[in-house]
Image (cartoon, rainbow, N blue to C red; front, top):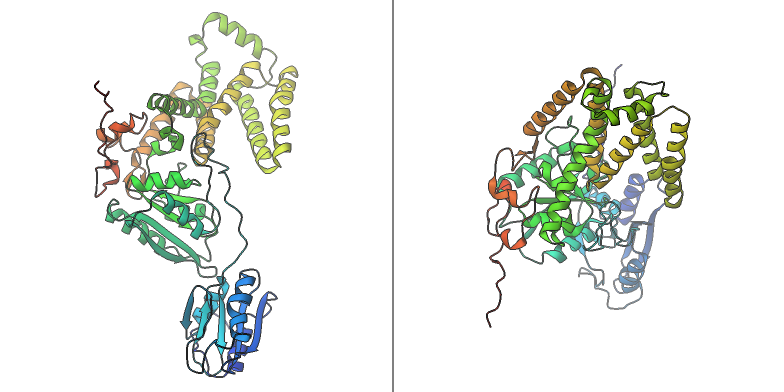
Length: 501
């Protein structure tokens, strides 16, 4: 006989009974084989009613339970009267009458108080799970910006963003994602700035996610993006509250996922991944130079190894004679073709990169030094790799380190290998085909329904002031039109004028 699998349910809608013993037996069945589940039975001093307090040890604040709940009910004589409200000093108190809400509340750190003779229970806000202190962001270091990064608690993350925008127009929509582990997902936006259609689209996508649990922001990003098969990221993940606040002011929304130290920003464009919060803390000329440098680094990191393979394999006639002689002498003892040579070095570089990330910081630095200097020199002296290839791979690695966004760096790493294969097969023709394919893909890609190549494709001349270049701040009086904000004017500051004597 075939048995259909039953769908998992996180709780039931059974009502709370009058008898306290029945309620205790029911929660025992719900949390069986759970060693950190605590049931504390006692008698309320003033009323003489039997009561039971349930909570999960480790998710609750013990001092709050002892001082704000148990002490007033067991010790104080004015804690309550029969049929009246209880006097407790805990911050948040709610009433629930079914075990489904009780189970959800306990699993999220609340404690629940059952009282004999009452068909409802008190849900008490005593959450106190372990959390780390606010620290400097690890992936987005800043020279002049703030040194605060998001943590794994959504409440603290929202508070840090609110410190930058203490305005009543900063609104929030809270959603719950996940069947087994319900995750609080909060959408933050400026109600008088953000386009309503973009906001509804983001809310709809999150509501359609049906999974067991969302563990981090990266999982949510992959589940709601427009093209999951693209190598390019379609949402910006940031761990900086000042960066998130800046995106909100431009008419975008920020999605905060509980238990994740990064937030999601949407919609974004291709050029958003080459911008840094430090661009707005330095002079506009320096910021423009750095953005142009990042664009050049992107092209170098993606195309330089493929260009070297194509020149050496097919188009060596474009190399000056003196350089060609040097290159021929360097490659004279190498037994491998340029493609195999490049693959060996690139895979070695990727291994060193991953080893440096996984190992402790002091050991990781040692691995980088040993791999970059000792190993590189050894393979050259052994005649396995040419000197020029080591230079090409090192320059490529340095270029990828310049890019400020890790997701875009990861995409460039994969694109580089594809272009190397095309250059090996077809030379410059393969590189051009790969470039045209990448551009065509970028033009068709979207982020939350917005074109990925904006403001270059489609053209939005007004937004060019903060894309590849960064004009002076007093010229950036409008919000990006690419996000179709309700309120385009951002500031009325004009060019500073000299004071007349």
